[in-house]
Image (cartoon, rainbow, N blue to C red; front, side, top):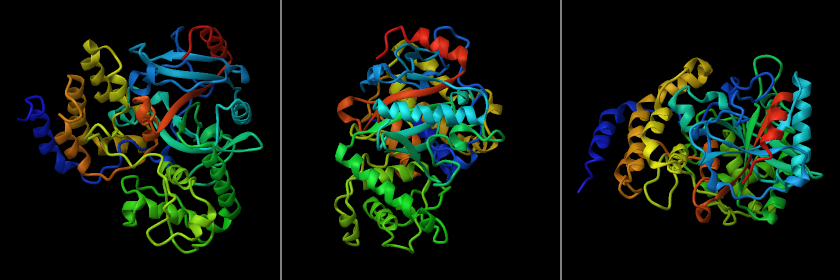
Length: 445
């Protein structure tokens, strides 16, 4: 028999479902509109116990922070930053001191990339997620996406970390010192916070990934010049495997053939997280395996995780809109209902760019049912109990790999994770750095 707790939710879904249409993926923000973040002098908080103000829905469970850091190998302070509502969730933070102005910001980011790579905090294949704490208290859409707006892919050369991100242009690619990361002194303030998330791949795959990145860089002027084969994809609702009516094995193989310039005609546009996901899946393959791959794709292709549904329908799945729910369930049960309201209540939406606000309003019909779904789970219903609701919520959009999926994959039970949360890097001013040095004396997971 259908649970009485589910009946109102199913009714709400039935009423709102037709209004969803082709809403943009609520876990994804358009990169080309991602110019609304970053305070001029870096991350800050007025609370003496915190370096940054991150609500629970922008945080991870403390129990999920299991990756070891060699803190003696880098010079920056490391601290545990409780969420604004609950000490059971928060962020492990490395604070980086930066100066004022674009050149000072670039220098801080290059030094970070050098020192953290040499300490093993940044490794080949890591995903760096642009994190916007200032999006807290705005609208449900950026809350559900946990304040993440972009996914970059890390590779190393000479022991130093670099990033190669879609749109594969000078605004994004570099040593975390391009305008997306450091700002341009004008309309783009850059970003002052980044999550480092580590896919669970072998060292052999990390080495192979470096090879693929090298091949791509050497041919990029041709690949994305006149041929325009891996240009930016702005429709986040339709992953390439859907738009091309292919399997993910085929799209990964096609990307490999484009990089090797065996295929010089196929166009395979990708958004930021899609590109990173494909490069990781490609890292299990050699040049020869891709060159000789049959039409159904190379058997060597190995997805780090399968494209994710909006919410999970069974215990083997994770939903890309469930990050805040995972953190919610790590907090005391008595306060969860009030915390759900914080996720789904519209606050100061003027802090959103016009692009983010438009997308938030577009997906607004989905947020009521999703809020009810959170409530049902918080009240004790299992994944199996809410499966009918999950089916309806996820049915109108294909499984996907938005930036937030990399973080959500790192938040659950360690035996089921496809990625691991490493740390959040926060760029701060001198006062913030002094505070971080003090807070670093407290216990840090």
